[in-house]
Image (cartoon, rainbow, N blue to C red; front, side, top):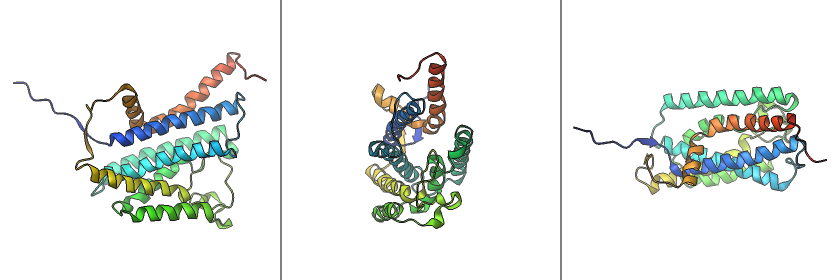
Length: 252
């Protein structure tokens, strides 16, 4: 007798996969634009143009809010420390890979605390804040205010600069300090609580849920965020290198 098929159940939120998918696509646009500028195809000021700064802020905020929400949805009651340890090992290895690769390409401005380093720390810092409700938004406002308003020379070193409060942005290719960016994680924690309460079993979503092609693509991208983060820049830079060696040059 044929057994009844059982739908596979995963501990994921389809909404968060979509959000991460959008964030990845925006990140690729941002980084490809940055690469085009480095190769001389366009001329933009990514460190002073408010439009690019706002674009980057949106991307980082989406990633960090999704991290906060997924922390609640993954561990609504108790933390699976074994699964957490494996995730932190993967994330830590990825962060070290980014630091090493950036040190080879940009020795004077390598990434010593970028978005992956931040995510590693924030993933742990967010755990005891699950289930705190509305005070999370108050705390988020305070973190954002402090990170954008307070500064002291004491923090002007890589050993403490990862916290924030530096008197000037350090010379590095990517810098995502705990203050003010942890505010986005706190907002994500609050959103995760709302998602959890909106559905009685928010973590049990059939993988066979119907979706259009675009929606399915976003969810697929959102499920492989870390891998795409690590691969997209080598691929984009490799493409520009091939074009350059093939004789394509930016217009003078």
